[in-house]
Length: 163
Image 1: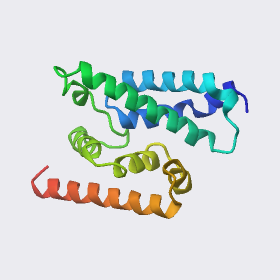
Image 2: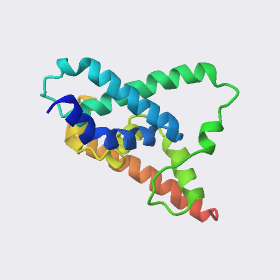
Image 3: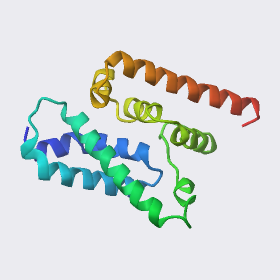
C-alpha cells in the first residue's frame, strides 16, 4: 500500500480518534493533518510489521500530547474554552449528557482513558491496543472494561442526582 492509499483508507479513522482526544473539531483536523505529514516523512521507514492504523494512531497520540503540552503553556487564560465546544459522539442525543461523559473521560487516569478511546472511537482491536502499550490483548480487554465500568458508574450516579 502506498502513502496515498494509506491516507485515503485511514484519514477518517485517524480524524475520529483525534476528535476523541480533543474537544475542538478544528484542533482535531489540525492534529490529523500533522499526523499524516509526520507519517509521510517517515513512511519509507515503516516496515509493515505493525498494523498501519495502530502506527498512525500512535503518531496521532504523540502529536496530540506534543500539542497539548504546548497549549498548556499558552492557554492559562482559556482553560475552559475547549470544553465549551465539546462534541463527543454523534450517536449521543443529549448534549448535556455527552458533555458530562466527555469531561469524565478526559478526567480519567491513563491508561483507562486512552484504551477506552482507542477501542471506542478508534475501533482498534484489543490485540492492537495491547501491542501499542506493549501488553497483552487480555490486559487491553480488562483495562477497557474497567474504564467502561467507571463511566457507567459515573453516569448512573449523575442520573441519581437528576441529570
